[in-house]
Picture: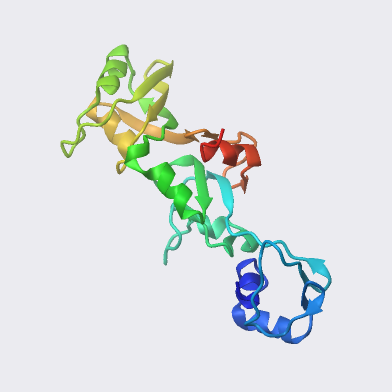
Length: 237
């Protein structure tokens, strides 16, 4: 990889800024000063330093975010705040993207990464990756709803959902539930409850595959995945 691309990718500035850095003599590869931006380095074997400090190159970044309501699950938008806007510059420089989407008013677990292979693995319909949501429902959720979701309900466009696992946590005029589904249709949880005559008034995703939302993360906060979380998410036993 070219030295200017490497340094730019990990946050040392634009290509132009990196060229100035190189020209100043601040960058060394294996203790030899490098000024040519076209110089190639082995990111795994070569020792790169900037002003004497070791530089660790990383290709991928994996972030767990507790997405706040009112923020779009998108990489950019001209008018509204996105989850990328929340990131610190040193994380945004890796150009991560949200794996799947949460509705604007939905909060909870959102994975952001620049690892396209992992994203495909988690979103592929063939993989049937389970996603679990906590929701507050206007209306009394009953055993009949549990059976209906288990069989698959017909959405407003005629699509019949795959079986969903519904658990009632609190029953009453407003019911608290957890729902696990293996699909990701547009507004699916809300539309599934509409299909049985009820309305979602609060929705939060709490898990995706093996990844469970860290309860210590406040709304809008995020952290990198642990090695163990990443290993399990990739299905490596």
